[in-house]
Image (cartoon, rainbow, N blue to C red; front, side, top):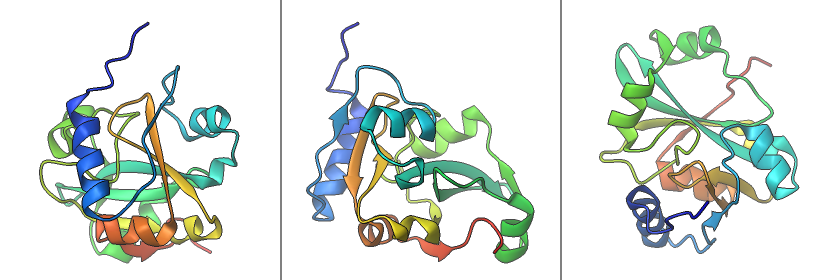
Length: 160
């Protein structure tokens, strides 16, 4: 299978990375990595170092939760913290909000910024990896770069 590395969503992500001074290169993988476990295996790293970009709706507004691949988002816990009803977004909502498909959603490169929360568990890792707008892409960055890139609010996605 030949991969078109000129994919528009990936180019949008790359532009945002460069505009934020993030120099890590987008890596195109031979196989799609739609899960944190698949991405970690492809990269040879701990699953917790994968920054999952998960789109939810908070009282019907699309929002982004960047979570460690080692965590599951506790929607009841986050709903209480955020003061609204958090639900998993439909594939259509994800695509409309991000311009990207589930399995390749990046933390940036969206048509408009999304309110974002970043899992504090990701700060345990000196380097984390996130999808770059396509299921075959990932890129490295630091926890602090992720927070700055997304304008995200730091939060525990699982109760202590």
